[in-house]
Image (cartoon, rainbow, N blue to C red; front, top):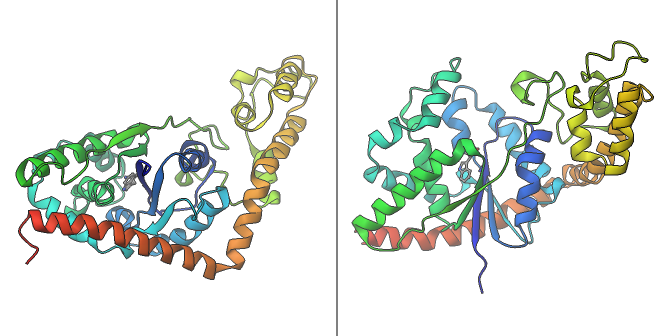
Length: 330
Ligand code: TRP
C-alpha cells in the first residue's frame, strides 16, 4: 500500500538553530519511515517578506538543505526540493486565487499578527496577503494527507481546507485532498540570554556550529542568577541552561547535575562542560555529514535535481486534473 503523504517546508531566511532542530527537524526525520514525505525550501514564501533583499534567501537555501541532510533527512526516503523550481506551484497558486475570497485572507490571525509585529518591513503587498494560498498550493499539489506544523500555522491549514472544499464543491468531488495537521509541539527553547532562541535576537546556537564556537556560546549562557559565586547553591528550574540538559543529557547525569546545583557541589562552569559534551555527542555526527556535503556540493545538486524530477511528476498529475476541471486542458 502506498504510504500517506506529508508535505512541509521551511522558509530560507537564515541559518537553522537548535530551536528548529528540536521543534521541527527531529520530527521530520522521524516521520520519514511512516510517510512519504515531501520536504521543500519555501523560497517563494521567503520572498513575501524578504523581497527587498533576497540575498539571504540564496545563501540560506543551499545551507539549509545541507543542514537537513546533516540531521538525517534522507533523500532515499524523502523528496527534497526547492519550491521555485516547480513552476506549477505558481500556476496552481493563480488558479486557487480565483476562488479564494479576499475576506478569508484578511481575517487570518497569523496575517494580522505578522503585519503588526514585523513593522520594519512593508508587508502591505498582494503577495503577502496571498501567503496562505501559496501554502495551500504547496500542500494540495502533492495531495498531502498530513502537514506537520506548529500552532502558529494552524490558521493557514484551516484556510487550506476551506479552499479545498470550495474547489471540490465548484469543480467536482475529490479533485483535491483535504489535509490534516500533525501538530508538533514547539518547545520553548531558550537562547543564550534567556529569551526565546531566535536568529533575530542574536542569541541562537546554530545546528552547524564548530565545536569551538559551540563551546564559546555555552560558556556565555546565563545560569541561575542566585549563583553569584561558586559556593552559592542554585535551582535548575531557575536556570536558563538547564533545559538544554533535559534535551541532550542522559537522566542519570541530570540527577547528578540537579543535586550538584542545589548543594553547590557542582559549579556552573563544570555544568556547562557537561552540556558541551552532550551537545558534541548529539551534533558531532551531524557536523561530519554537513562537512561532507559542503565538500561534495555536486551531490547536493543531484539530490535537489532528483527531488525536482519527482516533485514535477507528482505535481503534473494534479495539474492535469485541475486544468481539466477548470476547462483549461484544451
Ligand atoms: N508557512 C510555513 C512557515 O512559515 C512554511 C511553509 C510554506 C509550509 N509552505 C508550507 C509549511 C507547506 C508546511 C506546508 O513555517
